[in-house]
Amino acid sequence: MSQQSLDTVFQEWHDNQAIAEQMIPLIGSLYRCNNVVTTMFGRSLFNRSVIRILKDHRFVRKIEGTELSVQDTFPLIQAMQSLNLGPAHVDVGKLGVAFKHRGGGDAEAFLREELAEIVDGHDPDAGTGQPKDVVLYGFGRIGRILARVLVEKAGGGNLLRLKAIVVRGRGDIAKDLEKRASLLRRDSVHGPFDGTISVDAEARTLTANGNVIKVIYADSPAEIDYTDYGIDNAVVVDNTGIWRDESGLGQHLDCRGVAKALLTAPGKGDVKNIVYGINHQDITGDDRIISAASCTTNAIVPVLKVVNDEFGIAHGHVETVHSYTNDQNLIDNYHKGDRRGRSAPLNMVLTETGAAKAVAKALPELDGKLTGNAIRVPTPNVSMAILNLTLDKEADVDTLNDYVRRMSIGSDYQKQIDFVDSPEVVSTDFVGNRHAGIVDAQATIANGKHVVLYVWYDNEFGYSCQVIRILQQVSNVSFLKLPRAQA
Image (cartoon, rainbow, N blue to C red):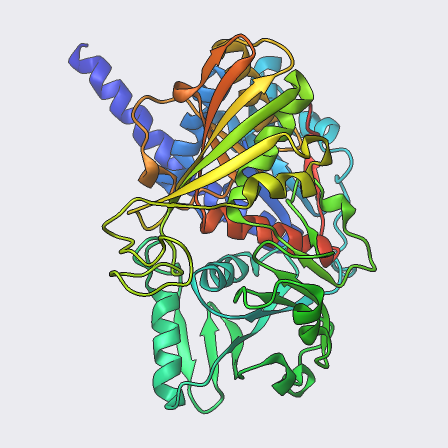
């Protein structure tokens, strides 16, 4: 490559950086003023860096086979500013590809056609609904990630307000609050909190990016009257896992100020286990206690759903390679569970998983068709599910991968299923991934009716995003997703 060509490539990069810099305030204005969330093939563009925006544009080449640059999408972002758009999630990436295939032209006219449902739909006086109070009961790994996501989304359109967290008393309240704030501020796996956190020991509050969060100290739900803290009609998200049935979780409903309880673990008995994207429509207005199932169930059910819809699943086995959790011991010590007493950072630990049986609660058509087991491994986060399936119809690797890829970008499951086609990815590459599961195309095996799919998942962050989606569902927070998904 000549020096002139090298200079041209370098200048083009700088030009694109400048355009991305101009996009950021426009994206922020759409988010805060219109409750319009802009995405790039499902990846949020709001509150992202210049480099991240450029990388997300580059990502389109892998899934669409065509280049997409900020020069293609910037005219669309600009035009969206003048259309008085109503609340929605708008995939600028998909619009950009369609606009480019059309040959460009009048961006505003193109958007008036593609976004007709929300054009001139913004009424600054009407609002988008009533905010819903959220309480996190427990503030461990999942609780703190939920707090991060809720605070991140508070700026536009989410309508979920994190009002309080409930923890057990620890003696010195001021010191306890500082420690809680520090754990929220710094995370060994997910990195630093994106913003500022302050502590008011006298008021017993944490303030994260302007969100004032009351810290309530209690040893049981019976001790709490949430209305004393200005909280009413709230959803309590139970992250403790102590209670998993209606009787135990019903304690939250006995508290004044609580409307619903959401469990971040598999529910027992008659508690509905919900995998968002699959059976969230089963939630009715009468359901006051529901479960978000497990991280593994959320990872595998969407993939099993789309595979079963297209090829049929006769039977199969799910093997989970799961990062260790706080339930295990750091060093060898007594544990009531088999094998889990052995040191988590030093051993692979064979254990049980209920995920295979739990699939039937979200997908009744697979009842009795799956078995499962689990291996805990010495990594702190990101797990993998290996789906060893016998299908009703034959499939080859290319056919299966192409189908799953299309489901991941163009179907109603695009928030649940991600797709990667690289021979170099490893578990840490998926830390912070917001999908329920990510299919690794390079690992797919297909031999007639026998196939094996490898599904990565961030068992903390990806699962927490699924929980947030259920929170939105039970709080009647929903937005149009445009352009409309096409399978």
